[in-house]
Image (cartoon, rainbow, N blue to C red; front, side):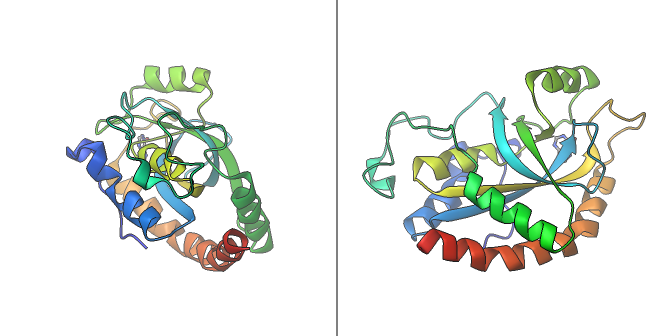
Length: 208
Ligand code: HPA
């Protein structure tokens, strides 16, 4: 269990951003749950919505798998390839478990596509309109690099976003970082309860 992560916007190279994911994979983790705070682009979302990621769009301008390919990272001979599939980046099976558990606990859980930018500036309203046209439901500054590296290693991924704010221009309000943090603290209980129930199920599903 990682206490947070480092981000590219802090100045870390992607090799360092994804170092913990590599370590988890080499320790034998076969499933990874990634959580993040995101801005809501989809207008059916509200501040505080939880969203299971169905896919992502990497607009950070880089890729953590850049550089020489290291086959020792392969979880099985089928993984660790130079060119690797991302068509099921977010496991449909793990997502189905998340939806079932959320229903059981009466926690509303939406589904959506996460678009990643480099940051650290929040987006302009024009960028958000463009991202909506591209098919994005959420925008954030993390996650995609870890997910790319997890998939390189054959690790199954569940991605959960918390909509801490509606994205720029969606509401007639400016984005306030304190508010982003406060929404995170507010939803922490629900997320903890969901994850506490999900982790044993995921462990059972990924070892059976
Ligand atoms: N944009 C990008 N990243 C974010 C946002 C946002 O609106 N909210 C939380 N992380």
